[in-house]
Length: 289
Image 1 (cartoon, rainbow, N blue to C red):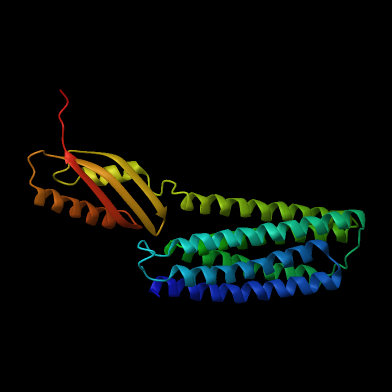
Image 2: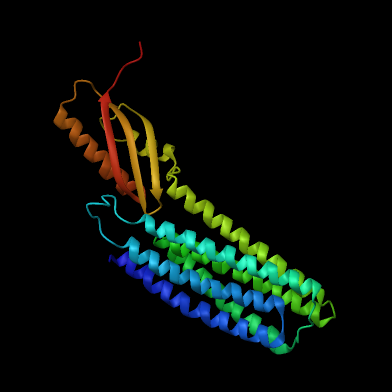
């Protein structure tokens, strides 16, 4: 396991601890006080912890080295694991909206106290710290798991704000608003799940990983390259694969063309973060008549 994967694994374990600490506090107090929105928010926070476990499994699979059956490595397992995170979000959204509908037809007045607001304020502060830490590390390490998981936690922050608003409403006698806020939380959760799916499918379906104009700008500056075309990129942010066609002087020797392709490979890997594999197709330059 490389240092990158060890760092991601360590971060996920730390985040898991805080997510489940927050979830336990919300669920316990929500069940005791019969607050639908707080219980829903607790279930969402518990889902954060479940997504961390999915992330750990994905990282263990993605960290395996290149082998005969996987010549490009196993890194996409990290992206596949983000689909599991999206699934936990959809599952949580379904249960929250179901409970919200139940409360609309069978309203229960939750017991709202100063302690209720204190619980939500403390857990929201913890979530914000965890979210910012995980997102920053995810960007630094180009990790799908950490970035998507931080999005999961971000929805928890918005959900907590909504719960605090519902507690205020209930305190002033608007009991039905508790169930309505739980419904809003389910929409927030589902929206985050769709965003994660979009990002994951982009990687798995080989969507463009790097702007082709950026590739062209770098390669055109290399001595010996007459023109460049048919640029394609795919992969994850930390594992970008590039293939391109470059035209060179038709009188260039084979060994010189071979050396040029290695130069292009090295320069792209140096200039553009995340590029790990470059295939260069060399062809003779044809002047326009």
